Image 1 (spheres, rainbow over the protein chains, first blue to last red):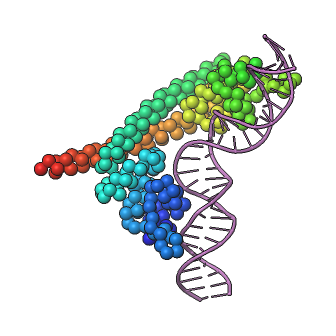
Image 2: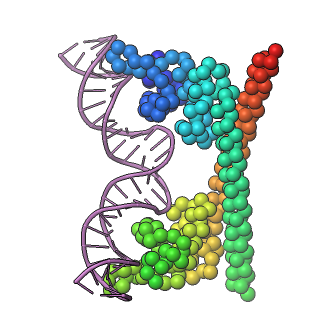
Image 3: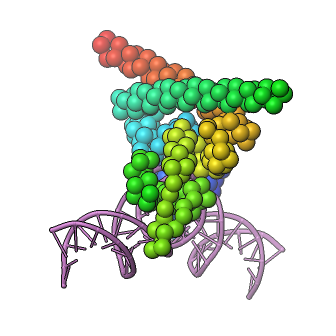
Length: 127
Length: 127
DNA sequence: CCTTGCCTTGACGCTGACGACAAGGTTTAG
DNA sequence: CTAAACCTTGTCGTCAGCGTCAAGGCAAGG
């Protein structure tokens, strides 16, 4: 499997795969002419990476999951390092959710205030 | 009031104020030697900008609020354009909160799965 | 032989809100 | 006289995850 095929099967681009390789996440054999050659394992690795990035992970967060897959596990989640990252990420998400909740509250009250102000202005105009 | 003083009073940096000016948000008179000179109104403008950026607005989102203040209003929130942006931002925040909630769910289930897997492994080892 | 369509490395662009520095002018205090 | 502490414009760097050329090599079909 060459880079174009892997890219298509994983739903991404060759550029992206080279990028992952440059950052030590994906590995490739080389054919005689220097082309990157991948096996099915790499396909699963790339899909794991994509799934985690989509959820808001950074490349560094993904490393333990890739290592876990390479260690022969069916899922990248089951290794201790992955679990640590999972817990941390959940905590991070919780923090952001809380913050956004507070922001939402504030914006809502600003909006309420603005509407109330407009009401008052209209009423004064009507008099 | 020169740029350094305004920066300090607004809790930001001269660089930032020049940046806002370059993007048409803050205005300054010029003294004979070419220094930027600000009045109290600009202080309020800068504080409005900062408050909104802190909440996750972009510079473009802030423009209507600044215009609203410049139009003589006590609050930047009360003008129609500001209200439009407020509503849009609240909607955006809602979307992100929902997405993060789903992400949190997914991560939690991954974590649960990983823990369960580890339990099974330990049990097998104990046998 | 020539085109088409893969592949290679290398390098710059992008988004946003600035930080950091360069190289210089001004004003004030000692 | 000079150092300190302001100010000016201009340019590059930052973070992340790539997109988008550029310039070239390799393989196969007509």
